[in-house]
Length: 267
Image (tube, rainbow, N blue to C red; front, top):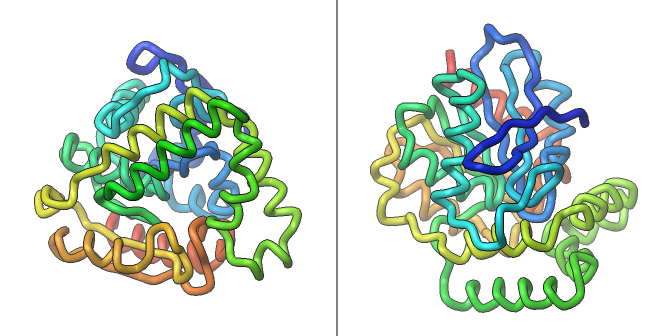
């Protein structure tokens, strides 16, 4: 996908902007070890009704990696600065996995910029056991590169049925993982280690939808229910048949769910 570039917080950030400038803006924030191309299935429909802003996280896709140690506060500030650069005052935010974590911090740090929030396959606090697992993965990537993460990551992100029946899709996601920089992976993984926002979520005032995957072992429905219980009037829709990357594995169902919510929240 063609990208434009902006200098954001001192580094080069890649983004892509789709749709009529008169439409409400929707930001899409991807998972760890992918890039904005992860949203290709959503671009068939979203720009027909919304102006869609996609971007590559630090050290992912075509964005620079400013060091290898980031915080979720910094990653949220990247979004705010990009919106300012593009002279966009408010936007809906759709985040998947780390993207959903960034979305929660964005909602708390920049409430005046947020029109609506969709949190997919994500959590609101990283427990000590998960922190240790993340650190092990970072150390492995430092030694062996991103290739070491391809097979175990795919096994977490998709159901066995999808891996068997959709090899071309799985190969595409594998390529996204391999194109991630080591510093970007490490920096964003360390940001995930610092996730701890559960107790502040009652301050989120924007209309919110939470979308867990039915078979997501990393962020099961209980993680989403914990978020829903704390954000006033938040909605929750379980994405049936999906593991972690539900926007790929169940793209049609995913699109219908988020389009329905965005139409209601932004009209």
